Image (tube, rainbow, N blue to C red; front, side, top):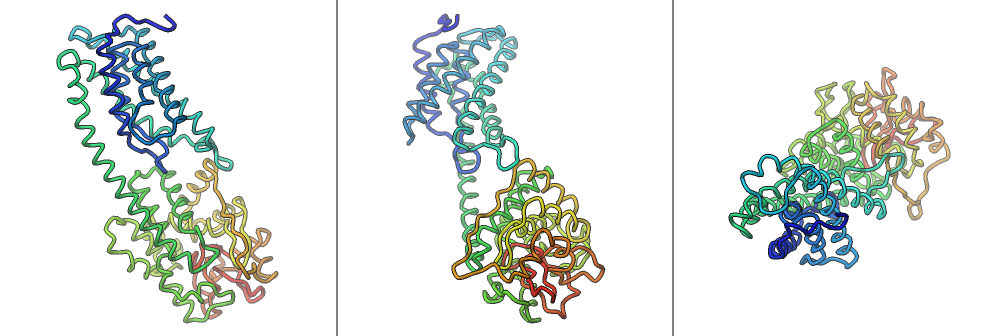
Amino acid sequence: MLIGPYTGMDPATLILVALLFVVAESISTSVGSGGRAGMSPSSAVSLAAVVLVGPVGAAVVGFASCLAVRRQAVVKRAFNGAQFALAAYAAGHVYLLCGGVVGELGREDFPAVVLPYVAAVLTHSVLNSLLVAILFWTLGQARPRGRGRFNWRPLVAVELSSMGYQMLGLAIAAVWGGVGIVAPLLVLLPLFIARWAFAQQADEARAHEATLATLCQAVETKDYYTRGHCMRVAEGSAMIARELGMSAERVQKIRYAGMLHDIGKLGVPTKVLQKTGKLTDEEYAAIKLHPTRGYEIVREIGFLDEALAGIRHHHERLDGRGYPMGLVGMEIPESARIISVADVFDCLTSTRSYRKAWSVEDAIVELRACAGTQFDPRMVEALVRAVEREGWETPDIAEAPGGCYGSAAAEAAASPEGGAATAETAADTGSSTGAPTVPSETPAAPAAEEAVPAAADTAAPTTALSTGPATGGRDR
């Protein structure tokens, strides 16, 4: 019983099912970022084999994965074959233990066979997830990041998709007796068509992503210290959106907005973005135009949708002292309130030409201090929860060639120990009410602009740094 049973296993059926499995496994669909994991209709054939040829036959069918027609290393083929074989064999025994019958199903076998089959599907999924989790852990793909917990999302995406196919295995087994090898075609052909459409959509999404990434690089070439900023803001914005329970489609739109939030800086002179001293009135006015310019640059890109509002208004503040329109509270689009928090958080935790990066802990304290005046408290707390769970990778930026971090006074003002001052006075395109202001990523505004709210952005991510006359620092 440990290796068998062999009863009910028809050799002809076994060969046909194995061939179908190889064909289905040869057209897997990538799931998750990077395309490192995938699922295919083969899982439906594997579960159909549990019913048609029993545990041993299902294991043989599963191991046929090694023969899949696609470029794959020998080690990966061996792992996939062993994975399918073990999962199918265990599922087959659970199916039998729950009262399932092996062979071609008849009308009299329903609905009694449904419960054993569902148990087999769950067993197959759990064991498959465990094996893939071990592989991901070994490769470092799903290890905790920073202080975070295990990153289970890639596994869930794969297994939920696969379980949908697995349930169709019972339909294949049910019609096998009547139409034989045509059964999988009747059941899976519509899915093959849907899979093709999905693949086209995925390719289009990757093309969109590549286009936006190119635009990000164009912005970041203007300032050595902002390299990677747009992508980190995009990731931080997506983390907040997911934490708020937004749909996958909205999360993607907000991620796009994070990638392009500073695209308007293409219209700002490089010497202004890289300036280490205070800005003139004209220079500061040019900086404040970048959200509107960014909106104008990308507004004709149809797939951005909600992202456009995030790009245009990510420098607005809840207290109405932001720009370009001075919106107040919930007048600010939700996407913009998300990007504002992610933007400043990355700026604070990144090295700039005028100061070194803050720790994640100090940055969180600063964001919370400015919640309610500059930031939406709900977005701040969502980011905090996401960072505590998933961690945050701060950029490792070396000193730029011929560059320096700035004057000792500016560095002292920007240090975490001077954090309270930087939030309230430094970056103070200042608050006349004394409300906390997180440093913005723009060079310090001219003295005449002291009453203008601190902008959390520009040539580099939004960071609040002291910029008072005493330090000669820079609010960037």
